[in-house]
Length: 142
Image 1 (tube, one colour):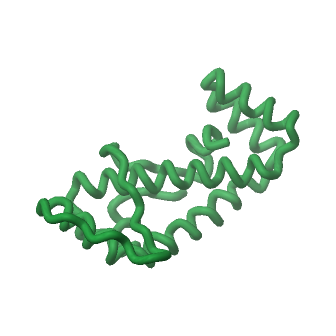
Image 2 (cartoon, helix red, strand yellow):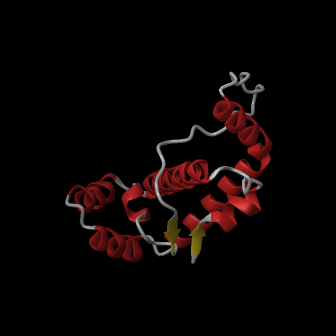
């Protein structure tokens, strides 16, 4: 089971973020992971499969979408794990820049533009910590 929580932020070098910023970062990680998994799975789907899967999403039938994924893409949990590892590596690399930009923003000082090739993650509105077990809510990603 994947835990998107304070322990993950500690591992990524973001444990010193203020609580509200931690929640924003966790929400951003979750949304980014969901999007990437959805894109990766969609690349493997035929047009007919994509239509079938989107029908579950349009109906907000999370359980149906998950069952459909388990049947049609039994490797989807590995896709989730792979994408999470890639995302973690990217964030860990950018952690010092993320911390610096966040602290400057909170202090009211203008943030310098990011260095070429390394842009800190945008941080969306605060949301509570997220918890994933390789399947929860990721069916919505595609």
